[in-house]
Image (cartoon, rainbow, N blue to C red; front, side, top):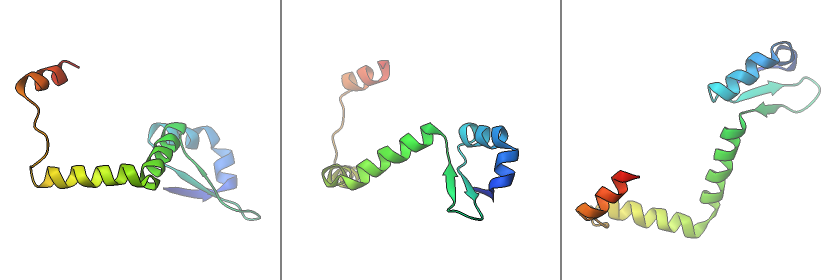
Length: 90
């Protein structure tokens, strides 16, 4: 995460916004007379929101846990050759 003063951010606004978008680097902007704020791309923000949704959904987390258990013990569902071919064609 890049951290900088609001003055430096303001002076180089386009450069820092481009870095946040293109390099997926969040930027923490410090303000002397106020609270800090974060600049990040909309894509990264949406991904964070999706992650928070999954983490807060106990049913989804239980499904993930069960899936991980069967994966680690190699006892999960095994697609047939025909199903693999269908998956590969997507």
